[in-house]
Image 1: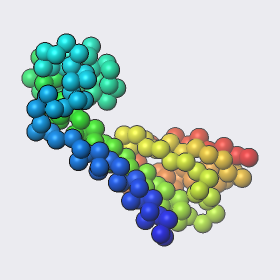
Image 2: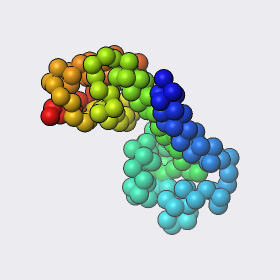
Image 3: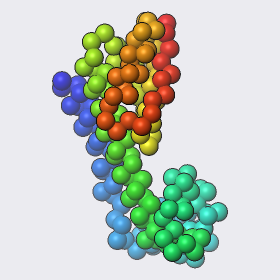
Image 4: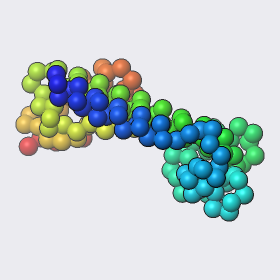
Length: 156
């Protein structure tokens, strides 16, 4: 139980500290992430400039509030805050899946790696029997917040 608590603190600690380091009310001059994307220094991030950051690029259309084809500093800040919420949500899902696998008897949970991105859980690692692979997938699918499971666990 202590190992799970330590794991949960470790998983949840990193996104929170990253979130606290970004001040959404800061001016663009004090936001290195914004300035890093605004290559022409016009105070906006174009679609081409957004290609440098996969997460900004992916959320570009949904955060271009005024539909002018570019992100202002405030729109960029909203996109980054949304990304931080996604990271935190994925960390919570990962912790829940690891806890569920740990609680399940007969599943060597320490041999299974769990990665989550936008609610999609990727399982990998090696176990001794094929039935463990399917059980791990079924257990993962029942966890709250899991949208889909990609079970890449191998048998040795």
